[in-house]
Length: 476
Image (tube, one colour):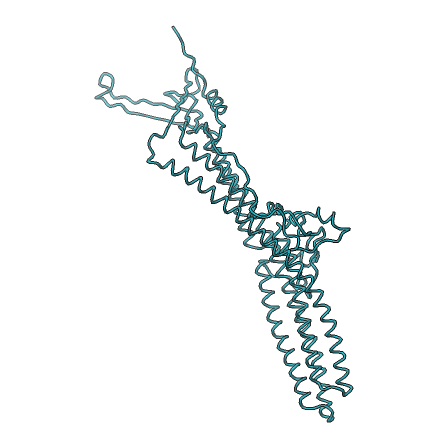
């Protein structure tokens, strides 16, 4: 007589694991850059001849930690406060943890779920169907290991879903990194804005003090019959204009301070607030003619590519849905009509229940789902390319402004020096009785305006460096 040997469920599970592993997802290929190979050379200042080799090898801003980019100790402390307290960054960090947990959930579906199960069953058999017309009670007790319904991933459906979840996790992590870079840049920009307001406020107070002294001098000269009423009123107008400027910049500084504290998410100690503009420098340099592929390291572009990879993997899951799904349910343990006999010899039992489900008619939903996954990939491609184009424009604009702002600052500083000399000469001619007070008035107005414009240009130049640092990917 032939005897059939029943293979253990553990052996069958091992064989099933060996069978799984293929994937129907299309091979991923990164789309070509939809922009020029390099940023326009005229958009940034050309390096000196002796510096050209070093500039050509200069790394992107992503390679420069913000602790090296921002050199002021107070600004570094304020950024540290923001990284610890900003709520938007906290939400981004929690989203990363959530995406990581979702990935682990999806990954766990590839592995079998095994648990311990114990059951007890007592059944009363009535007299009408009992043996010899006598009622009886039967008992069955079972203890063992059970395998929940486990899908064999023969066509890569679960692996494709796992790959998509992993790419979602990576994209969320890049979004967090981008949020951190944006926060660092925003805090630095707000801190510099407050510094510019404080410098303009100090400039206005100094002007008010100087104008007040001039007004008192002219008033005494008027009382002595030397100066005219017109001179006195012109000097008074300068005092009031300076007073209005002090009030305006006092309010502007308060608003900038509130904006900074909102970004930081906490009260900024007074000793960490700026008194005047400080330089923001990049110790490693950001050169002209940067290759455009540096954009591929920007957090938002890296995140968009991970989304594209996820959409590509989802096509594999949609294709696998056309094929049969095979799932296994199994158990191994002991069974006995008495509790004390559960672990005696002769009580071993096992179950093995494979199941195959194959789609026959889905009313076109499988084809529609595959179409949706392919369209999602095309949308992800367009989103990825748009992110690169937007980043290219941002970097090009920042590089172009960098050139003009340097020239503006140099010209504005020269203008301030010229107007200071003009004021000195006009004041000497007035005091010498050669001219009236009107030329002095014009010189004072022009100098004050030029000094404020110089502060604005220096702020714009520093803010542009921060922007350039951010749009090139920043540093963590």
